[in-house]
Image (cartoon, rainbow, N blue to C red):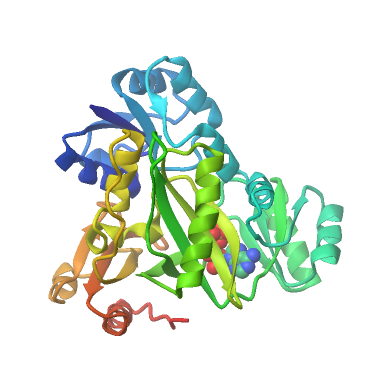
Length: 368
Ligand code: AMP
């Protein structure tokens, strides 16, 4: 059984590494010859829009998934037309996640609270959006943003002018800047035959728009119930197959959806060592219609992203119980090149040790 992956980044690499023990084979497609998943699985090297390669991928695989959410819709249609593989998760979920306006409308339609927003495609519309929603806010590109890219915080009229200058060539969205108490994400899987399994809530800390740390399980039981309920609504709406993630701001006990990702997610990397079944294995089980594995936490996990470059391996590994994941990427400022995870018996010990790792990496944060 061969699983195709459009995109061969670290998510594809961890999918392949989770699938080999299940007896699965993989075939990836990526424009980068040295892409992380291409180092552990066969790679079709070319553009995501290369029809010949997409058809080859579709014909050689039972099912095609993606590790990158900006795969053009037309590429997915080429795969479907090749009468080869099924596409999981469904293309409609991918389309909703690719456009922040479609995503907001989906949340509203399903009764999931989200930030106040307005679509912006002219300077005058930005002015009206600011009048309606107020300051401060965030101006974002509707498409192709990730890790805080394509965003501008707007606190003043001058910020709005600068933001428009920088981003105004593309369709935009303006949303209120939520003074959140903390950020959380919920991750769950739905299998082809409709079985659903949801992981414990993740508590996330971002800096400059990039995820730094995740702790799980996180937050009180009502947050878990709310988040899992919202996730189930989206899973059922799309008759979804695979892993889905929703990120929320928490403000005075309310969960406000920020965005969703129709794929395995950085905030779920802790599940490799910290849950009975990892998000990667459950994604594969879900799309192949195998029984889903338990999502139970095995302890209290802390996951720290390694950004820019992998620090000295020996320094990290001398810490007892620390698991290192090196994605095999070239160092570059602001690039996620790996992560490490600790699983502890108590939340207090997990927090203390996670903070120590962060301090050693000179990227100290304060936990909410
Ligand atoms: P995003 O690309 O939308 O996930 O944004 C990346 C990060 O920027 C979020 O996880 C937040 O930390 C911050 N952010 C984005 N949008 C907002 C918002 N409307 N209010 C407050 N913080 C935001």
